[in-house]
Length: 254
Image (cartoon, rainbow, N blue to C red; front, side, top):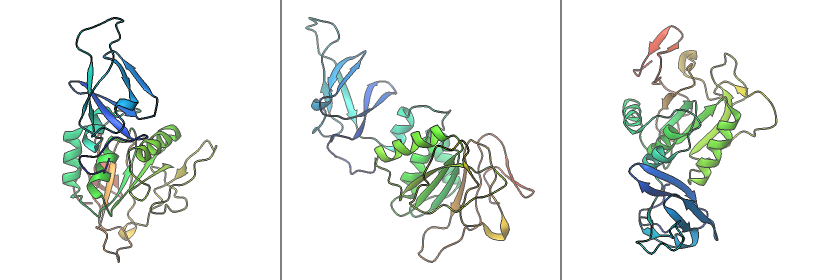
């Protein structure tokens, strides 16, 4: 996802196939693989080794069809395109709202972000793209399956744990368990309950973060090598105001 433009498709890459207007299909390339869709049949081997942005041709689903062969446009994966193609485990946030969130949080390279409610990972991918290369996104979900699914997609899309750490935690809990380490994801065992709390360094003056399972983000001062604590944070909730110790925020500074 963070590869340079003009990259070549390789085995194991996740590419996006444009099949029509806003119809994007993610595809993990495997040697010998075959994509069978309503447009036709397309061999993975015909995509591997081709520059991303190339149109590939396939074989018609109709036996004996001699008309123009079907074709698909192979696109490089990116945060904004992934929002259009992401498998929905939950409702997601789309480009316009994502832009507003990132703008209001004043995010940029080197920032550190905590997100409550990973969901399908649409917003998380854009957070990662924004804070790269030396920032980090801590994202949490109380649902084990969503957490594991998001982890797999982050790695497959080229987002390392040093950039995005996804952990199974109930961050709306009033208790807080052991701390989360940058670039290290907690092991998810066979237990039935997630850990509690963000597990991040404490906010100033004992403030804590509360939110719903949609999107809550806090912005940390950009990495300077000396910064070790969370500074005054911005909170944003898409569905309801977020209350922290009597103060209510809908996107302003708490």
